[in-house]
Image (cartoon, rainbow, N blue to C red; front, side):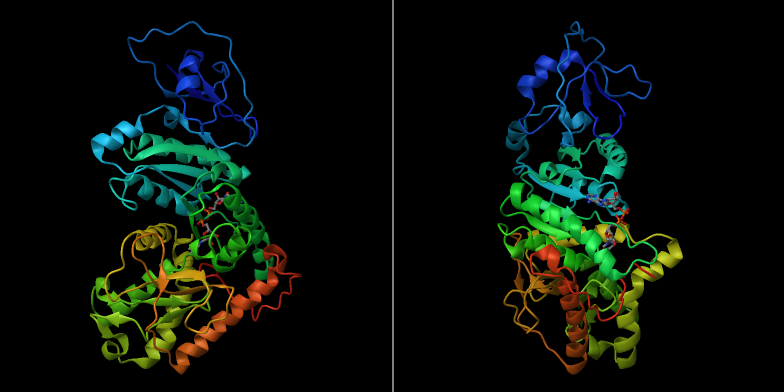
Length: 440
Ligand SMILES: NC(=O)c1ccc[n+]([C@@H]2O[C@H](COP(=O)([O-])OP(=O)(O)OC[C@H]3O[C@@H](n4cnc5c(N)ncnc54)[C@H](O)[C@@H]3O)[C@@H](O)[C@H]2O)c1
């Protein structure tokens, strides 16, 4: 049996399956798989992804059937073959398959993240997964390349891969949605312009999640400006609890832990209780008042107040930009690691006394932060995918002043996207044109 893939232009892309597979496919393919049948191509760039078994006799070619999928998510290559997951669940004591949707799947961050997900290091060695990869029209070809690399990696836990450019198809039954895809700020573009450009993406993706994802889908928004994108997304998904939406600030937390460890001369596993407050932008607040080193308040270990208030804080706010200057591209690998960390923090119980940071919806928060925005705050989880906010937090004037600044910025961003959240006419009075951490 041969399965071939033809590099055809967008919209006419069709999975090509040898005619001998037809009778097999129609009865055995799982219902969600959409496969279009055409005769084997004569084109030079046809790709054979599964070879014919040496002693297998090919049935004579039958007239092909054609179904035009038009933008539909398709199973990819070897992942279109059937398997009996139920039987494997019995023999391997695997858990039930989970669907993980990833947008921007052909991008740099995903190029690291997908392989972590497929290897089992995030959801565990007994958790089979299905990857549903969403790309943009421009990245569809690249998405196929990513899927080919996943095929070639032979990950036992990776049971399905499908690719597509329609979120209504790709997000079907998603239990997790990792929304990474977004456009970078172009030269001369104001932050307001970026908010609108990327906000449109999250309107559509929010609506799609609302329509087709699992009702308990957990959503992690990575694409920037991620806090306000997450707000837009949740506002467009009213049937999914707002609590299920996160904006990624875990990379900032990890960076802060590393810098405190470096200054204190300890390994970074000694730093705990690290909160990033507010926006994933240069107004974010890495909280050294509540963080601990070897179980002690940071200020008892690092006595250099000026360093903490000025150098440390700024180094975290601007680390992404410094990294781009050195390397010529933005942090993709460490971002992927931090997405994995963020997921693991939600599916494993938080160690006693510790917490993690995540940008979450400020509905009834105990800190007096304005309601109805997505703000990074300290969270704990029982490991069930849900979280609660940490109550015993200290504040001082320095921390409150900084929190106010990042809160003001997020409130201004929210006013700027009123047309995308259903909250009225947009008014863009952003306090200043602050940067995303990766921008210069
Ligand atoms: N929150 C964080 O901590 C953090 C850290 C680093 C990067 N980021 C952000 O993550 C995003 C992605 O970064 P990257 O380095 O992977 O970028 P990238 O440019 O390498 O990849 C982005 C991919 O998204 C795709 N895309 C664009 N619009 C899309 C849409 N509507 N649907 C699906 N896919 C779409 C693009 O075609 C591209 O393949 C950027 O917005 C970046 O600023 C966030």
